[in-house]
Length: 407
Image (cartoon, rainbow, N blue to C red; front, side, top):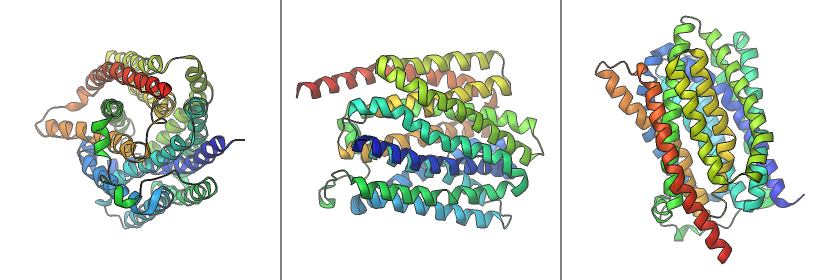
């Protein structure tokens, strides 16, 4: 088996451990925050997200410059685990104030680590190999999400919601070890020397490369969709499970486990076929069209079922086909575009899309507007913006491939 496939496979296993732990963190941190402050305050805590993520990406960029990609990944993995354990210890004291910090940490650490895995994969495979392996990579990684979600559902009522946090931290130990082994065996991509780096975070490459700019705009749009669907879903769940936090945590664990099982079918079967037989432009167009239909149905008949389906479809496609098709666009790019600009797009962009929309929602709520009544309409508009941005993105990406072919 070639080096390309070994790197993709080993990093997929690394992501599998990380995503298994994240399922424990996601369900527990969300329920703990809602128990402490209520679902109506989710937009308020999300409003802090852009500032937290900006700081995380800034720190990451500086660590990358001086430590290189391998040691940066190890440091950020173990550092995230240490922060999670610290939050767990504070949670045990009964302090409510730690729950928004835990919630924000959950949102940041997972994307910071996952995007580093993809940066290494994109630096190690050719465009053709990328089309073949991206779907299975997300599928192998998704096994961790399925296992984690199922384990939450099976164990939370015995161990309690708080203990799920500790389980999430422990999962980062094998993921850090496996990532370090993969880099050690297969080497690091060529990186510019520290003294030549003029931008630790990667903003300059967004200005210079239109493909990256359009990707950022699309990611921001998709995360507005994700945020409002999540808020609506959590609002409905809080009403349904009022006063029963462990039961809600169990439901959320089963929900995410079922969703991730569906994602695996898309990852292992659908994504490789689509990427092999269908143009990237058509695949990217299909995504917002499907979500338009699902959100439209939820607008007509809002319920846990219809909103859950719309939210579940978004997450299932985001973790599989959309992810696989998006990563192909990074393969021809430079080290700084893959490791720095990508973190701006897929870490800062992903979480800022949620955070910025949350700022607006929180402000309007303070004015007495019942924003829960408008979440689905906002999502529908954001999907329309996403669809419009696909055309300049894919046109530019096609031009880049043509230019490379000519050279």
